[in-house]
Image (cartoon, rainbow, N blue to C red; front, top):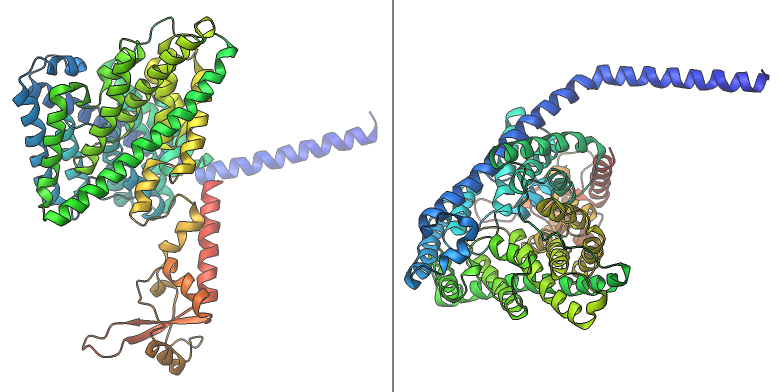
Length: 562
């Protein structure tokens, strides 16, 4: 054997031996802790799955009780047989009760949902509000059971967030662990709610954590599987929707039609989102103008929903009966168009009334109706090259929902797992990609991130935009007694000119002040108790703020790539 070959073998053997040694030491050092965390993830996933199943069961029971229905799966058909006054009274009473609950237990009368969980993951070490969250869950359950037109995934995700928050507080989890637990709980809840384990795990990573770090993948998958097992023990291994066996793509010549459907779905998704935000702003304007009490706002929205439900009961609840009808092409063209428009109106009224619920299920319904209507046009123009209307409904359902959530990967998988149809993936993926690409440029990437932007929470642009809000001047400043502190006389001069910041001012506010003033530091001063001049506490240096910003970005990058 040549000497060169022997040297190569010896070198490879030595490197392999060193690698195995390092791996064994790592396993001994971190393995037990990692395995322990996986068991915690399993427990969190099991509890979150049970909570999701329980929430769904509570809605089903309450809706059946209120509407006197034997099977809520056909609630829209059953509602046609009820007297008009009942369809009107139920959402009004439900809205009044929701208003009382939110007015009593939340500071702003607003239901907590997915956007708040995303904010908790990014800014609050994986924690969400618990008191307001419990009130929101009860309010959403009442809304979905009494005629509100929204979805159950928003409340379910926040319930999961509360479970993760409780566990994180008990074990005193740091930010990374808290976010991982939050992802575990959300994955399990989504998986249990939709019987979609793959999509549940990816939803937690793509939408809530907004990264695909390897260290988070294993526990999140474990929790997602646990949630799915809980769901299947309760409901069996069944899909939410059943498609016609004829829903197959005609051939590649039909793909341009799905490109057009994707663009149309992106526009529809943007219209849905903007309708919700416009309705909310308009309702707030009217509430302020006429001094309407906060607790009456959901009741007024309920009255409007009741009036709509008298003529169009398909707007009631999550809308799965109508969505299923669209996926089976049991609706004619004008029904699909009218139902889609009215569903957008009903969802906007529900959200503007602060009644509670999520947007994913309504987006599925609007998307399926949009796809079916488009399919009728496409198959009529070129019938010899076209597939079935059901396939267009399926693609439209995924495309609109993906654009609303800003989550093309997990939404595509949710559509597959909701229907059990993996043969039409090409059509769905083409439509989803185009709709998401278009909608993300017309809003702040998704419905949830746009919600946060309206609150002044800037997460859409990434960590470089929001990490500045994590640090206050009091944390980074140099005290006035520090040997490296700023000259006191100069600080008082700047305070006299009005150039200073309060201790709780975040770097998000301070950094533009540095740029505008050109000073190397800003005095940090608190209001005086006796009404005199502000009390000097120290100085925030520009260089210290930049160092904190760089450290925060480095920590975020390390977490996302670990």
